[in-house]
Length: 307
Image 1 (cartoon, rainbow, N blue to C red):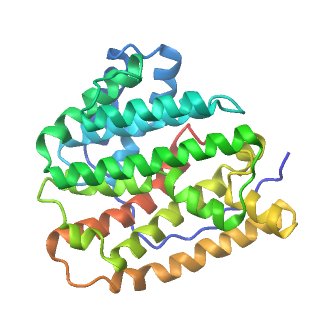
Image 2 (image 1 turned 120 degrees about the vertical axis):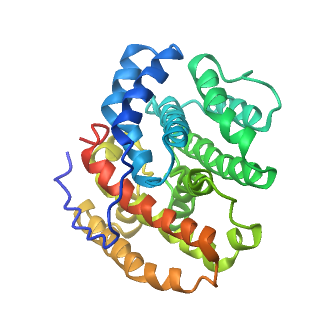
Image 3 (image 1 turned 135 degrees about the vertical axis):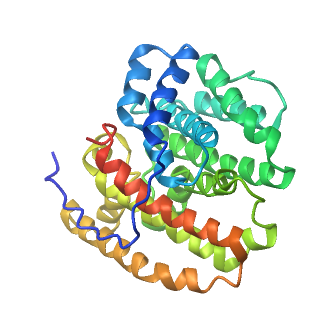
């Protein structure tokens, strides 16, 4: 057993949460059960408070849009659990789930390849964004989902083959498996207005800021989940990768991970300031990246998923 690792992470971003968090939580519990999800899974999701997570990341979303966002978040947590339910996952099965999800999002094959509640829940949650958002936004979202799920497949293959990634390999893979970029693409939907332009979204300064936000929430999660990950992750955790590469104990590696987190957080305001003039939609996007960092931290501390 690992000794308890001190997080000691000071986040200067102010916390926010939607006033519709609790009513969305009640709605979400009924929604998951309406799709035939077994009680044992539905109960676990309810205890995790996923609607409160969405409410922290998208505090200005309308009540209806917050329901959609909470439903999408629930699906991503379910697919994560489904792919991670065995200590040694089956890459072929994970690839089949990923392929089914991407086909559904692209409108290629209904729910074929994505059985039961996983298929019906994603189809239901995707219906509103698909009908309402412009084609360029849908392509952006599906691209982020593909990047995320491709990372899930790589991690499953690594675990099955006993490959433990080095630090830089892991950091790059973690940027996919975290699903932070997926959450970032949903900022425009939650805002209810026009999406940011492609030139803004792809601008190197925006990408650098988004990447730093991804790293901050990912490394926080790695520190928080270290004890569990030491038993189940096959080395897919920043602390474990640092410990293996530097041949140091976990406590020393955790201190290095915390310093890496603090250094990135110190750089975060300058990365935002480097983004060129961007208007209201751009400010909303940059705010959303910050909300994702602070919201992940606050929700993780309160959620039964981590406590």
